[in-house]
Image (cartoon, rainbow, N blue to C red; front, top):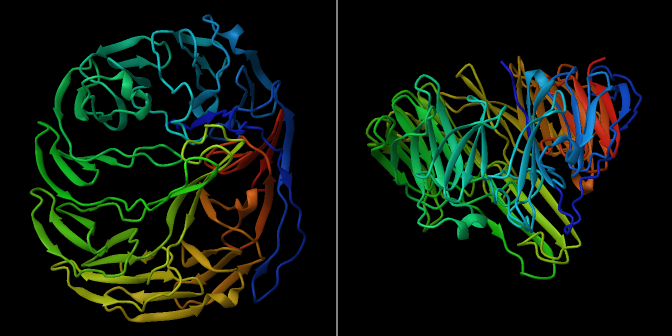
Length: 610
């Protein structure tokens, strides 16, 4: 099965956000294994090759899925492709490659296919005067696949509605299952083949952008939710939000339904705050609560209204720069079982929360838990046997825009520089682990309250749950709530814990200054790593684990051996570009075997496992 990576990039010239990649520096630390205590020092990554693009990678600098994938570097006027050996495959100026003279494309995105040795480079030449141009280039050959001037206003002229290089493009949605693009226009919707640009169908009955979709392969049908993007508001008349089921072959609307609620977008990613699931004969829409529709007829079956996310916002004045923050991922997604759905409900007036169990067929309320007073975030809920485990507290996602000059509310307006950040943080509250009886929702047990923070939980064989706060690591018997052990995690001297990883017979606690591994059986510590300051996120790719440090404008990636705690190596980049997933100047292949570091024209391919 071919995997795809979609990378979006925006060159905000007025905002000082030119994607100017910084070449990675291999950080060398020498040291050995300390027996017994398990303290680990760093090893070294090996450079496979160093090469150069023919142009500066100022807009996109990304790679495909594996070690022999191609590497793409683009600026607003040209592209250059290297193969897995660092040799140039092709390069060229867009005005020469395209037959409609598409050029100055400050917004582009790539879709990798064929194992990362091909795919599509989508170009947007949004002209302030004249007709917009788009073109699609075959990334494997550098040849133009198709171009068009029929699709206008696909991105805002002033870029003010786009947040950063992670921004979601509202007017075009790539449908991987069909290898096609859904293109929204002010007067309708088009389905276009990705390879040829051939229009499969066009309808005037569907307007607005596709916020989310789900594809039914057996019936070749698409269920989609459409809404009106802010920047297209003046272009669309008579628009109403639509939940639709469409025949993917001809665009025929099988049914359409109205939905309740307002589609809001995240601050930086600009992704709509909602979700859509097709489960059996039901469509579940998670927007201002949960709304359930018959997948065959579109008839609304039942709904429960509540706030999906608290959306805590730090506002800034219109002028003079500043920082604007918004907080997300504070309430757990619905938990589905074969016959029920469990919801974390936010009670608006008194800011308390509770859990409800509903019959999945009828929506009938089966039970409601006690009100959980003082809980600001409840981001995780699990079913384990006849217990429902609720995580009270935990990390939340913060999206932030900071400007110097101009306005943080409108990043592109007169700012001398703009910085975008997406990171995880904690809010002040009493944290704990709550166990409910699945039969009636009564509280079976509740852990002691953790004063500072709480990690996510690890469930082991439906018998044991592991969880930590900043300084301690706990194990509980799920049935009774009996505490099986309490380990002083602070003694590992790797900083405060913020996450946990299930790793065979062990649980690895990820902390702000490194890792510590503990045995599930009794809590004994296997190892603690050497100090790695500023850790704020982690990744797992095909069994390869990485830690990230993006604090103080850095971007450092550490490769970690989770079995021993040794650091395989470290890459630091201080520049821009790279994949938005891994941060400025860095991309990692999907198999986790190679790291790519970028600086202007330069590319370094780094082997993770020696």
